Length: 63
Image: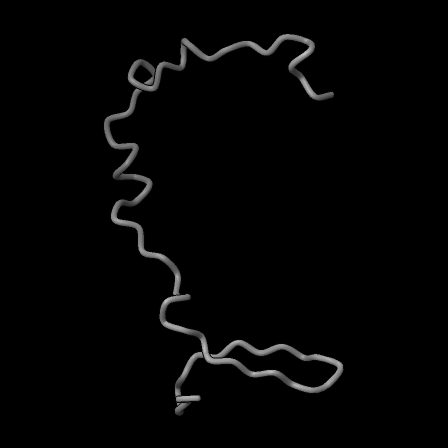
C-alpha cells in the first residue's frame, strides 16, 4: 500500500468498518498555469464587451 508516516490519506467510515486509502499524487489539486488576476489583467468593460450582453426574452427565462 506504500503508506508511511506523513502520508496523506482519505478515510471513510462504513457500516463494515473504517476504510483508509492513500491519496494518489495524481489526485492532488491541479495547479493552473495562470491565476485569476493574471487572466483578468487588462480586461476592461470595453474589452469584455459588456455592452453586447444579450437580454433574455420571456420564453428563455426559466422561471
